[in-house]
Image (cartoon, rainbow, N blue to C red):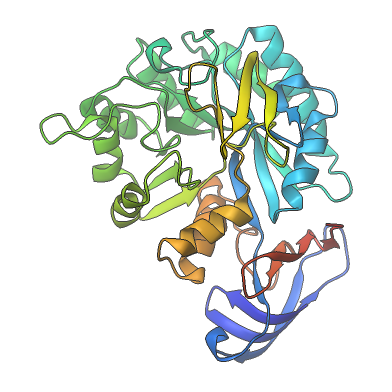
Length: 367
């Protein structure tokens, strides 16, 4: 593929060559350093990485069956080359059904599908006072249950409310087991957030949403993230978080990364959809419960990139926020960057930042 290639060392005007093998990797990047504003060539960026995906194309991860495959295909069309399948707070049997299907999809990436790297277990270890759009099945965590869930599908990320009795100790155990722990759906204080980070928590789930906000005398969980967080996810649909608050987070959190928190409504017309056991409504560009509560989004990662650029980020910085930082967070050193030896995961964008081509592990996807 030829164009303006964003490499770890800067822009190269040239060609990405892909090696043969399974999966295909980048063999070489040939060309010369260039300023993409000085020519009209396409942009070639690292494939997008989304660590918070509930659904798309009318399907929800909690359905089980072939839902993960359908969802992964929808997001691949929008430049997402790898993702974490994200579950909802639910009874154990619902979670296990979803994990069984996700586990199979992790092992068997289908044609034109984003790579499912594992699971983001967003519930049920959250605070029942900060459910947001989560159904009312929150409960205390146990490592026994976490291990059982992990046997079904690889748990890469777990959202936890650290103020719940016993959760701080479990945050440490989960982190020691190699699972990234995020603070979210929490009523915890600034102090609770600091303690959780000290116990091994690594990030924050959909920053500012479903957590106490920042007040100058009560910094809250958002204050803990802004003061101490190295990583946090944020939803840049410009509905969940005001552009000004996104800019605050960008100045405060070095490796802030973007997620879609997308639901079954992504890629679909206005109407009713399911989010776990909840009925949600897509209208006026958002997804809500009947009472008006925001319930995930319709965002895709290509639109996330465009939104970031629209509020003033460079393409290079926006690319890090939708790809590289998330890869680094998960320890995926061969994703999220275009360099020899990395997976051939890339997106080709026109000058309006619209998708022209998507390549996943060397496979050119049908759009």
